[in-house]
Amino acid sequence: MNLLFLGPPGSGKGTQAKVVCEDLGILHLSTGDLLRDSVRQGTELGGKARKYMEAGELVPDELIVGMIEEKMTGGELDNGYILDGFPRTVPQAEALKAMLTKNNSRLDMAVLIDVPDEEVVARLSKRAEIEGRADDADESIVRNRLDVYKKQTQPIIDFYRKESILEAVPGTGTIDEITARILSVIKE
Ligand code: AMP
Image (cartoon, rainbow, N blue to C red; front, side):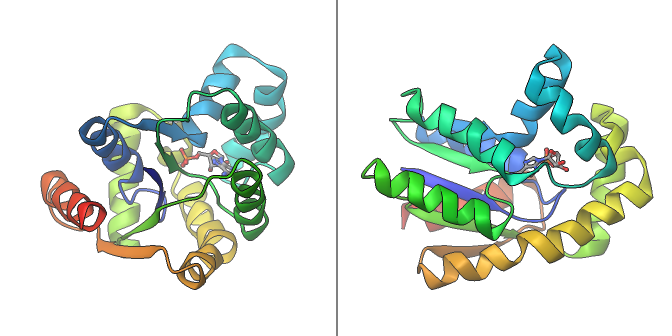
């Protein structure tokens, strides 16, 4: 099962992706986590990505697509996965489609976790306290990430709607309630 989780920053994509991956026995692939690891390890990619991440801007498509291509060819995704935080732009969605087609593979479903803006800002400031992510702590950076989501990422919702694999799930309620909704659309 090859899945994609979509939603604004703070929608709970990462939390839900972890739980659902465990339930289904598939791999969780978060580009945000991979990038944060690269920054921590001081790799070349981390060095290039850092300034964008700190500003709440998107890292350039070619860096992200290169990172995903490496994972796709490494074999670790062969038994299924959830993509979390990728694609974030239409060119990334197109690059992913081309990569999958080349490998005779495809996405089975794109799950959109729907959360209102006000709730997103409140959740991110709470996450800043718990996880200490600098890009969650500053309200102007959080607002910028929401703007970036609306301008650059929301258009991919239509991309997957046109591919007829989009399923939207309300992202409010308890973590368990949201997990149950997601599992039910996946298993249907
Ligand atoms: P996330 O943990 O998914 O919120 O990602 C944290 C930051 O990493 C984002 O604000 C971006 O700067 C960067 N990032 C993660 N995934 C992508 C992507 N697919 N395209 C561009 N930038 C990304």
